[in-house]
Image 1 (cartoon, rainbow, N blue to C red):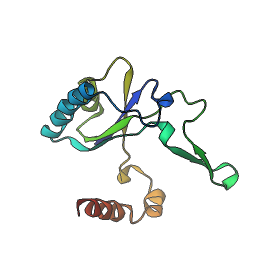
Image 2 (cartoon, rainbow, N blue to C red):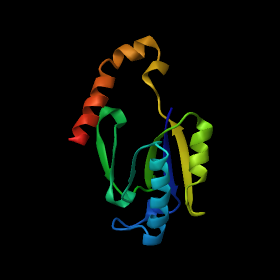
Image 3 (cartoon, rainbow, N blue to C red):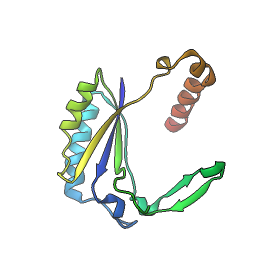
Length: 142
C-alpha cells in the first residue's frame, strides 16, 4: 500500500519566497529519510519552496485564472512529502510518528489510490495510466 506523508509546517504559508530550512533540522530529517530508505519503504521525497514562490491556477467558469503566491486566506500549506510503500495505514502512522518534526509541524498521511480500487468504468477511462506512470519513471531514471 502506498501512502503519501505530507509535511505541513505551521506558518509556512506566510514564509518569504527565499526561506530556507535550518541546517540542524535538515540533518535530523536526513537521518529519518535514511531510516525510511534502509527499511526499503521510501519511494520518493522532496521539500517544497514556500507558497510565496508559487502560483495557483483555478478554473472558475471553466477559465484558468493564475494567482501568484502568497495566497491570501491560506491557513496551511505543504512543506514537503514522502511517498512510502508499507503494509498498512498503521505502519504508515508508525513511520510518521518517528519523524523528527517540531511542535510547529504536522505530518498528514494519505493513502494513494490503486487502479484496482476503482469501478470498471473508471478503470476503462484511465486505460493507459499504468503505462504512462511506468514510462514517466523510466524517463526520470534516464
